[in-house]
Image (cartoon, rainbow, N blue to C red; front, side, top):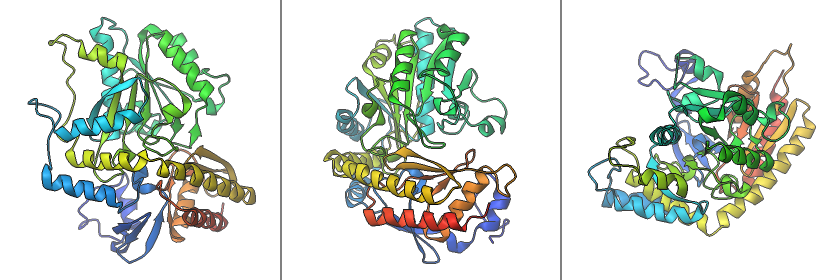
Length: 433
């Protein structure tokens, strides 16, 4: 156990409990391919891709070389002021745009996913305000939707504990149950609630296409209905693809797979494969035209020092090059199908597994929890996570749902998938309810 008085970091929501399980030996010191090594010398298959972001593994030569080259050339330039952005920001945007929905042709680079979501929400409100729709302040999200932390992104995140921990966050943000929580026909829930609230008072709807808290895949019918509803009422549709974008579901964006046309799209995580912080806000042609045509006095002030950092942009261009030939995306489809089949076979052998959900290399395994069981809710998922870790596989456990998320790098092999599935099978047998 680490001594609390000498440990220099504050890196957990519950530091006292965290330090009882931490030791010098379990700190990570090296990464190679899809595996990481701790200071005790043990290697783990990283089936959570860092924090869902190390999409190409830990030593991808193309990404590493691009970052090293940029470091020697121009290690910093900013997008915020003085009229001299780094040329690499333009190059990176030009490389990315051909792989995004055809109606989206302007990019604002940010530093992380939370900031990208906040920028998108504030931009929506700003555009409504600047056009005279001053009553349009409300933003609607979905319970269980995850959009980051902080006063803005945390407000949009549909997790009650985020809203309760620090008092009021960004005002006028509302949440509705998703279609996976018992609502009926496509659109029921969000559309009905907004209709009752007053669509003329709503600025934007923000949602993930695959809900990170549990792996729920929103259906094409639901999404197309919601898109038509938003379009008909002048409400901006903001699609958060921080987790799903850049190959996670087998394409550059899930948006194109389902065929919807958002007003704003956010990207992050896999945008730089985690090699340097980077996210993006992508605007539809209609939104960018409105923004670019504003009077000089109508300024939308946004940004921070490290937005569009050259090292992140260099990594992003290498990621784009790697995904562009289709080989990695084909691997996501093949390995995602193999993983899903394996997980379903394991679930059939373990009655405590209540569901397997997801798409591509973003899969959830949820456990049924008895009301009188020794373990409840997220505790079950955490015990399963630790049982898998004992067997050399790292996964994510969820705080609000008794489920784990299996989100390996996009470059996993069939033998890696077999190792994940076999380890899960044995770990489930280890769990005592």
